[in-house]
Amino acid sequence: PLGPVAEARFSAGERVRVRRMRPAGHTRCPRYARGAVGVVEAVRGMDSFPDIGPYAGPPEPVYSVAFSSEDLFGASEEGRWTVLLDLFESYVDRP
Image 1: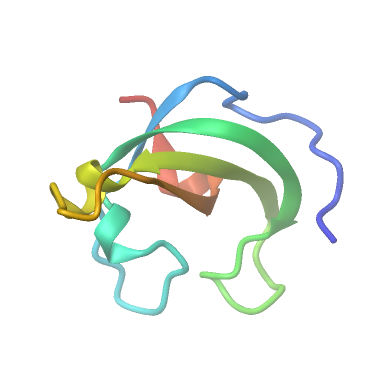
Image 2: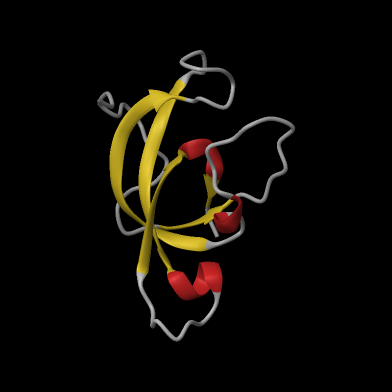
């Protein structure tokens, strides 16, 4: 379970852009979302930032961000759908 959020940079309804990054190690930010713009659906809570090491990173807000499938993968014969990703605050900026 995630802890309560003391202070978050973004709130539900705000647009955010996923940072373009090429970290040397593992990250929990999917490559296909980097550079894409989405809308914060909810602030999920605080969790330790795992990219620094398991449960070693400082806690930060986690956001549920909605993206259009067309923005992430292009147009499809299957139609358009919404992709929800839970992203750490370090992964997103203002567009």
